[in-house]
Length: 324
Ligand code: AMP
Ligand code: MG
Image 1 (cartoon, rainbow, N blue to C red):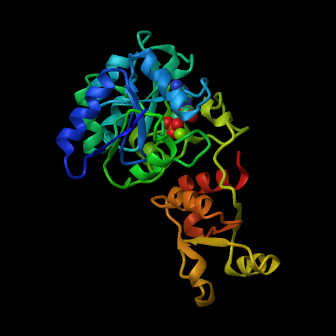
Image 2: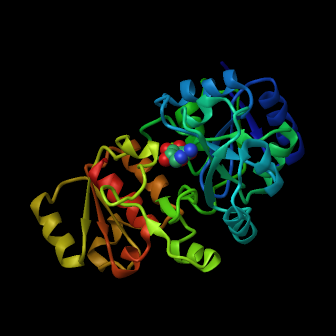
């Protein structure tokens, strides 16, 4: 299959119209959101949704997130929507928050991998919202990478992973947030964050006026989110988390000739400047992809206090370090 490249930076109208036309005809299309690029298909078209799993090489029991263009759209795919959803939606939609709701039975079960729940998000990206609206129904969209690779934050990343496997890629430039949305389950008595993201537990607590738990394996009062059981992306390079420049120097001394990068939010000692790169949620996946492409052997990450208080960034770093 030839993958069409649709330039939404220079010709948004024609890119959006073409993307929606392909989606309505049952194809899958990569498109930008503010978090990471998504791989979309029309939610009520089971054959199209199946193509997402095939193109990504994604296990069929890993559920997808539904993307809506307006808060009212939630009713088309979910039932018994609790009041908490509307409070969260008023505060954070459109934005990097995904809320788990009860699924409407008309939504094909492949979408949520057989679960009776559905994850719902309204992306804060004009191109994404216009594509969903033009497609005429919510889109399911996991990240537009091959399973096992870092999530894509540019159209080039999507092309690198999925060229020839999908009908089109809409180029909307780099993603502003750079990591996946916060996912919250509000169906139980206590709201549980099953994936941390840029919207924090405190942000959500302020809106709901009650305590929110952040799931960490083994401690959760609710079942683990299905996708969490899969081995996560880890770069080919060894990833090591370090607390100080002294610890980093000691690590370098062990294997002075390694091809390595250091990721940090801090000012680097002058002698290390050549191998130091900036650590941020916006760039972390691009750096991991570069490390793989350029065959780095080691990635040392300085987990300063600033980094450690960023739950979402720490979550992605820890996963890359452990590969779990
Ligand atoms: P992504 O591939 O980044 O779109 O991630 C989708 C993730 O959302 C899955 O791996 C799950 O962790 C989570 N998810 C999607 N649907 C549900 C659901 N119905 N219940 C719990 N978690 C879900
Ligand atoms: Mg993903």
